[in-house]
Amino acid sequence: MLDRLIQERVLNPDRVIAGMLHPSGNCTYRINYLIGDRSALVPHATSPVPYDQVRRAFRERFVTA
Image (tube, rainbow, N blue to C red):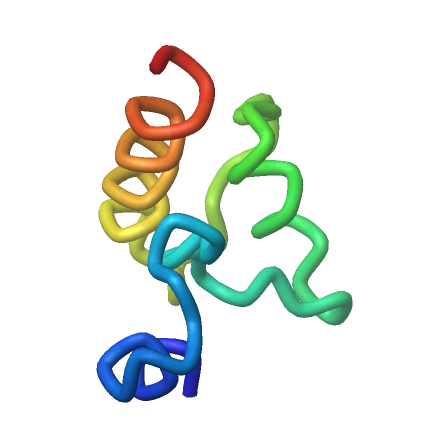
């Protein structure tokens, strides 16, 4: 939805942190993984690749900029 609002120029893309995967409260390992705690094993049904890509892009844009 945010992407669409950006495309329609309702939202400024510089004010949106895009690309973050939803860290559902039912899957707290996702939250821990996104914030950097990788001590627990990633559940077998979850691919860490998209999380790593999003986390890297987020850090490049907002943390190390």
